[in-house]
Length: 117
Image 1 (cartoon, rainbow, N blue to C red):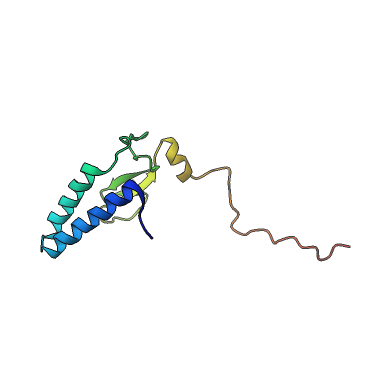
Image 2: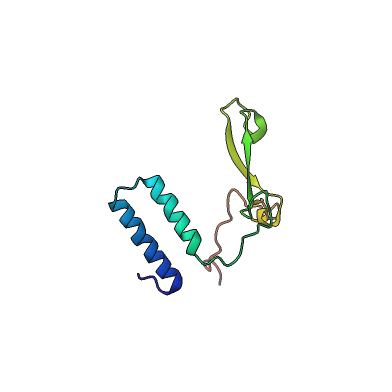
């Protein structure tokens, strides 16, 4: 796979630059920082991204911290942890349970043409 166009050329040059730094023995944190600076300086930035929902960053789920009490729904004592819940925005709609769609525990058997005359 070859990279073409202006963005591809910038990417190829950045990888060449990173390889030269690696061969020169530059430590990885310094290489990453230099590569990021190089790409930010020359990469064509179209526009700044603006989130619709600042709570979930348009993912639809927000992270909630549980200190080990029944906050998360567990009844027994447990260690502190984080969990996700659907966000109240429109992006969280796809993660909410739909009460109109109730699925039976035992599905009905499939209908067949057998027995019909």
